[in-house]
Length: 343
Ligand code: UFG
Image (tube, rainbow, N blue to C red; front, side, top):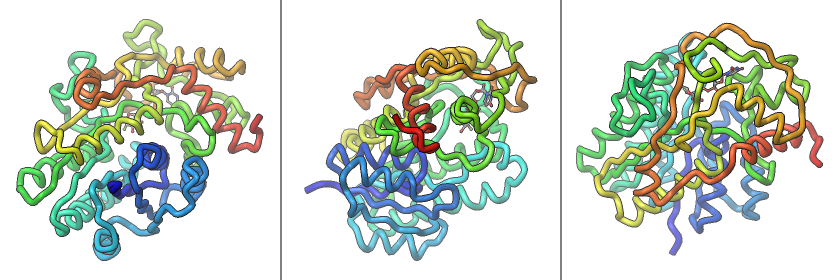
């Protein structure tokens, strides 16, 4: 019998890619999303890619305990993957209460529903942001978490703690936190990808929107960092590779293979890439010229962060596989698809 995974925020960027990979791995998927930061584009893409038009979809707010409880009544949920959260770093600085209220409440509500149903395997989507400006690189799971520089980052740290303490309480919850580095790219089908509302904050959507002419010019935030080319270093992880890490982690939990009831894994490539390298690789991979200029540093940016992913490689049997140029090709194909310019 196949296992059922509830994916909250499953119509969003990462959630929809995870839904595809879960279904392709043989899981049944139930999606819950309040659609506050997306439309049905990616969910429709999930249905097309998997050929499954019958994926249960609940348009609910995960802060609404009754609605969440109803899903647990209607399905035997073997694992829960929680993505439903606000994610704009800058907005979180301006509206901290909105972030704390939503991101903490929604997670505690789904955890409560899971516990109320005799327990569940819970996977929380965490972030490399919990490491802040790391003292030594690459970061391992044992690298210290630094004080959060934004309410968004603080909610990631707090949700990790909430999960750890809930697991410790012995009420049937097992937990995994995956700390993502920089998720980028789109599904190879170009049927689902990132759909930022308004002006993108993140690098790759800004790059693709500039290339297609939606934005005039990419600003590279800082060329005077102590890095080889002066621009920041990040660990860009392909979203499909990232999604596969979730399948591996869910399999480990459901299969009873965890070494501890609460585990943390870095999900990254282990390779630092500069902003300028992203620009050059994008141009080469896609044969397009990008209009860019150097701009002042963006407040809050760390100089460099990249993962030591060896624990995930070893324990999850997972490894990032896609080449950066393929990932950047997929991002470009998605942008062209959105603009109705598919080849
Ligand atoms: N950048 C630019 N120009 C842009 C956008 C970004 O030069 O228009 C640069 C940034 O300065 C940074 C790099 O591109 O050096 C990556 O920036 P992103 O905004 O794409 O990603 P971040 O590393 O800032 O963000 C990531 C995650 C967040 C998380 C944050 C914590 O996407 O979820 O790390 O630091 F909160």
